[in-house]
Image 1 (cartoon, rainbow, N blue to C red):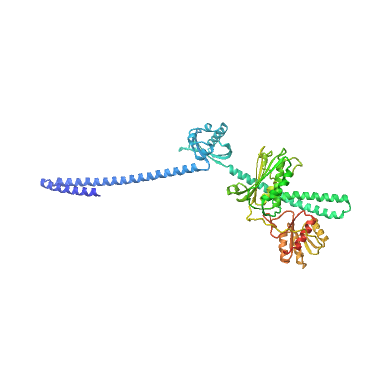
Image 2: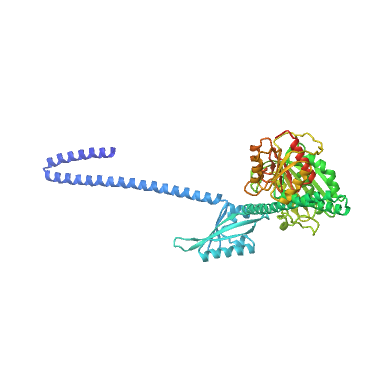
Length: 579
């Protein structure tokens, strides 16, 4: 702007000088022509300067835009490189000759190399011939098919571990749509496949558990009939020694069958637990002498208890049974002798650990480890050891229910169990039981054995199997009780409503006709508020047992039961003050 003002002043001066000079010279026409041309030149000059200024501004804008575009490109490249470098998958690029053109950080971590070690080289320069041949064959297939080729295989890493890897290979094209190389994205799915296997195993165990639970329930009903009628028969053959021995054999066999179904129910998580606050160290200490006797002289028992061990919420009797089963299994794995070690510890299972196992919650647990120095378990067998009836022992040497019972007990107790083993080195079973929220063991009052007296209270017995129903009906009537019997819930409700008063309802949990024993009990309480309830079952239903725990106030008698058990429980319930 200042330059234009100076130029205007100079032009004005020049024009005035020219006019005066022209007038003095007498050449006025010439002066006018010169002035005209001068103005044209100035006009053109001004126009040119404006165009130059406009073009300059345009160039400056274009340069600025180019700089911004280059900056965006650099940012985009940095973002792309950041994605590639920080990807949890290995990403790499090869040219048509199989030479590596790009590898990311994950590739370097996996194979223990740097980009400088790899770029410009082929797979045969880096990996074993077997692995490199397979790698090149996959590259060739991707180029020939012009599509994505997916492959899953085990990849050995330099640290000696074998990882399950899924790789996706795809052709890379140049600007003319011609093959320029092969791109590969490889993902480590080892943990994912492990989790899938854990889920499949858990589902399989759950299915087996449901099957064995159903079988145990039906078998318990049959055993209840056998045992009940055998006890009734026992009174009739008291003077015949041969028949008496036969009946006693039947009863003992039924008892053994009941023990077998009890293990099945524990595995299927349908047995009844009576959890209480317990000091695990004391339980283990009280078992030590018995365990040493069971192990024999060739096996040394070592017990290492952690000081200040947390209290646990557990069914103490079931835990003792579990430890005995583990000890016996360990003994059988050490026929030439060895060492059995039982250790305890306070542990906190983190979320990352719990996520690896089905039905395992993070939190505080008391860990009980049972380790032996025996023959160990082969890897192909290890995944089956918790299945019922699976055993590596000879025919007649084991039922195959020991570890399955321990597994079911752990899971039903909201705990966890793991097993580690190496052939020739031994086996360790880790049992995790939940830490108690209470800080001291509660002790209950001890009750002496009550004498069973004849009474006349009215009892309603509800059982759909008439052969099984005949046992409690006959047993209780023989003791003087007034018995009313029913085959299903609807019939039972009719008896409850007919005006008679009942002191006790003795009912099976599972009943036909759409009304189970729990519903019958609830209805009975509405009709007779003071009636007492006593349940029996071949397995523990959720209606009676919530998550495997006794429902507060519910009394349950497991089938098959002995006559004395029934009479003692009935008398205890009728004599109790709680309604």
